[in-house]
Length: 241
Image (cartoon, rainbow, N blue to C red; front, side):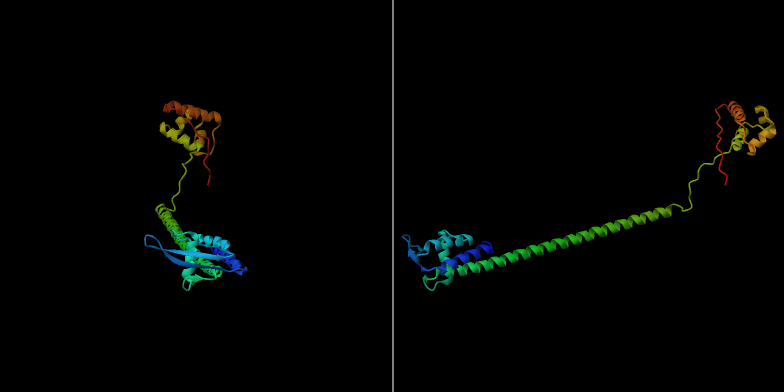
């Protein structure tokens, strides 16, 4: 049915036309057709007739009337249904302006209602989103709480005092003594094999003395031959506590 501005402008134009000099009135009356039906006929007179009819057609079209009559006839029928006392309306321009003002008010109310409805729908959507966001946050919090609980259970399942011990590093003397026992030799027998004094061999095994490189090579050669495998003696010494 048009927006408020459409009806306000049209009402102003009808009032401007009404303020001009010259009269304008119309009459409407029923006419019996040949088939017995009645048709509403009207006549408009006055010096402002053409401009009035143009505005009336715009008003009828803007009001969205559904009729088989012409736009002008539709607007005239609307005027007579509201203002006519009998079959004559003398002040057509003023009457049309009043109707346009009324339609402007209806359009404003409709516009206000539509905006209020849109605002309510927006608020409802925001509330739904807020509830969804709260649910998501609660779900995430519960999920984090469950993860934290599982981590605590895993921590309880693993003894706090448990530590991973690194493999023991044997000293050169411990390696010599282990290999000597594998060969079932006494210190004296080992000393004879490497052609060293038993005291020196004993000092090597006890760790009181580190064998020279040439003597260490003798140990390796003798043990490899006896055990029939390649023997490696690490020179890495364990850390002293």
